[in-house]
Length: 381
Image 1 (cartoon, rainbow, N blue to C red):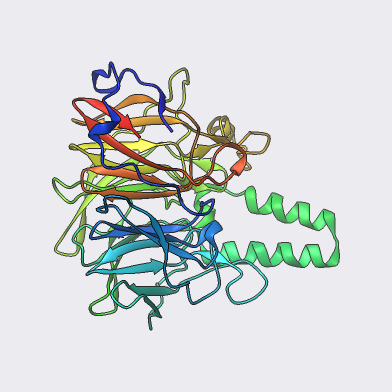
Image 2 (image 1 turned 60 degrees about the horizontal axis):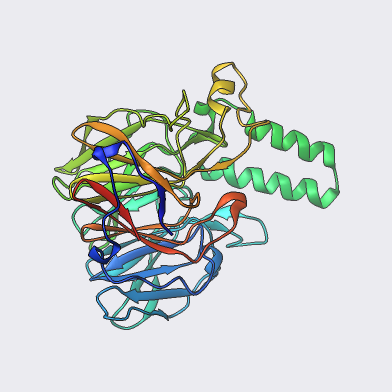
């Protein structure tokens, strides 16, 4: 897929040659969204989501990269798990699905994949909170930083109530359950605002600080290679309602030092930035790039008017905008050819790789795209 429009940001005037990027990467073997992925020593690993229990790897250093199936995930399939490479292994955190029963619930499990032996291990640990809608990155290659998540008790309770209403066939009760679930204030969802750290060497969970606002779900997160700072962009603040806020922090002596950063700017032609969830993000040539995501236009205005069920009557919209952040300011950097959200962001050296995702209407894609900032231009292959 190519950018269909490129203007404004970084004085963009033309496309750079795609030949300047790494070798073109093949599509994922299956339509892939809501899954997990990470990169270790140039090898990308992705799985779960619409791939079910299957996992695949792709060696980006190969002259002719090809996806290869690896050992299957050893537990029930799940959506919205997150993965990160630490100390040469892949760690998978949380997710949601029919894990312990036929009712959807949030997981607090952690799994380790060893590329050397092609084996999975369920670790004897549990995250302090259930994890879905979270993001996971590493700033030092040794410890995982876990940001955001829905509240497990509220989320699990909702699906349990829905299951009961469906079993007894009570449509009025089901409507009330949905209205109650969607009709609360932001603060009453208790989304996670703690920044958690997991140390696999010592199998230890700690808290290094808190986001300076409400908790989020589905934020875009990237690590700045210059200072190892973690940039957190937008996300949900309650079901159907996003936020335009951003924040950056560095972890110093096991404490998150926060930096104020500006809100994401509105899309061209819009007066309000609703914020996005499920966007792609990464760094190239010192520039943060944020791509796509999804939101409900009009939900912010509704919520500000006191309509707690903010996205009621709004249309979920998959976004195609590309934004860059450099020198303390956001810029608009054009559009993808097709809107895209809920895939996997892979930081491969100075390139950002977009793996899978879903397009308008929620259709999963097999696309793999490479993004780089070159000579003041954003290039998508």
